[in-house]
Image 1 (tube, rainbow, N blue to C red):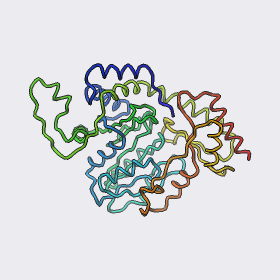
Image 2 (cartoon, one colour; image 1 turned 30 degrees about the horizontal axis):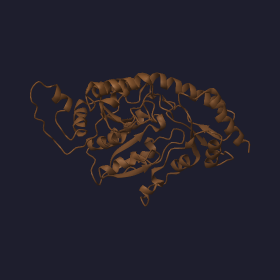
Image 3 (cartoon, helix red, strand yellow; image 1 turned 120 degrees about the vertical axis):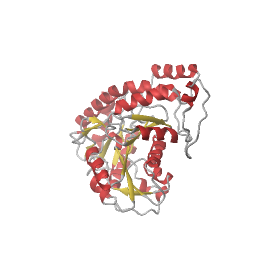
Image 4 (spheres, rainbow, N blue to C red; image 1 turned 90 degrees about the vertical axis):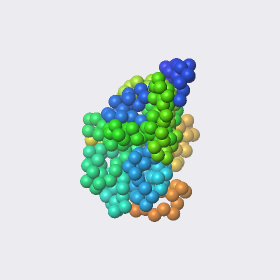
Length: 370
């Protein structure tokens, strides 16, 4: 992945610096509003990262020590870590082989009377079945947090992935389609939820610094609860606003590149590339390939690609196999372990040329013939 950053982003950041307002301020507010509109949500609350957004989402749901929160192990480790931040217990669910996402069936298989919430991930930009999971969470009486870190620009049932989500957390890390360097967003539909999230990200203050400075009268703020410093800066938001304007074009370009990969890979046995699910479209934040009877191991494929100048990487990690979660018991996760062991992510970015893709697939074709 190579972020698409240019002179517009540099100018926007410089203008923020020259304005004298570099902390959370008017550009953050505009970015929140514009991003929420783009993803089909009622309100946006900018934060310092998607990880802090997940933490605040669980605080908003009042998840406590002793509660269980179901998460996919097949996700960046931050998804599971956020559960530990509130003292709750992460419970790992398996995923669907085609999408890499949890399903109502895999969640239900590990659900217990202590389950208070589930964090479902739109993995690598592939949307999960929003209709099925939201209905199931309501029926079970548990909270649903949508980890949409990779999903800006993806759709489910003809709508942006954020449409209809009570709580979704988004990432603007440089590996995502749009970036602010670091940074994230929480989107919600409830104005009350948005108001509390804004307090939680800013030490529990009942009035923001921007509102205090805008007032013509002295403002004596109050701190309503123990909270956090999870703010975004106006410099980041200035870059984010420019990046948000690129989103539709970036998604269209990535889908064209993915279509070309599908065309080139079609004749190679033993490789199963990620595709759109029946109910939605992925933004192809990641283009992963599952090895299915391929004659060469995943690690050997990565080694050979690297030797030929191709920067591929292993597939999505499995948190339950990492040292941080050693000794934690979980239900069998055969699909998760297969995907993390037998998949790899191919380069996909705006500078990728047709010759690049021909070269990448050519190496894979050679390996398939061994």
